Image (cartoon, rainbow, N blue to C red; front, side, top):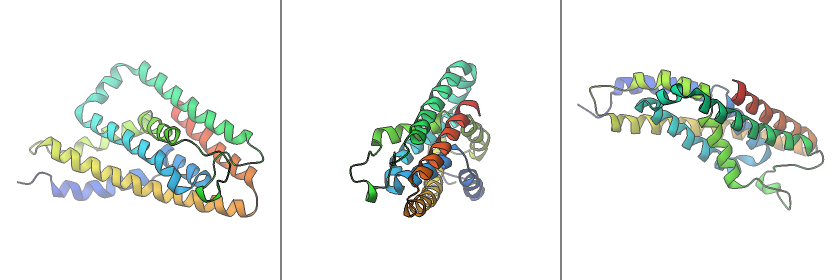
Length: 211
């Protein structure tokens, strides 16, 4: 007997690809940062998001999520703080009228570039404080665990696949955002880029806090 049920794995990959590619907070964040800082710099946000997704996935299987349900107030506070932080970033984008708040590396010059730590934090907070992410993972991941096989190898393989799918989908969204940002910059519509990106970030923040 192997370490993982291949028949379950065959269903797992398309199921979680659909979940990952569906527009949500993390994908909107990838689109926004792709538009404003480019795919390469957005990779730091992706690292934080992947760490958060891994934490949520392992927690869902090990039952840590049950503790979150016992202490909903703590989770709600964390969710509101995360939403407020992302909304604050969105406001800063809106207030910057004549210059890019975040720009692609090739165009950076002396313009401000978001710190790597800030990008990692954005990704991690968005993934961990996302109640819908918890709901999907709790509902979908445990059924793909075969009780008759060792847990650790199955969990390692499934989480690795989730992270690969998340990375692929975020790269798709970030690449689309980068292309859109470049098209708008050619028309010198810096204010438009800022406001689109700011609105998306405000949307992610509101979604996180009240979703």
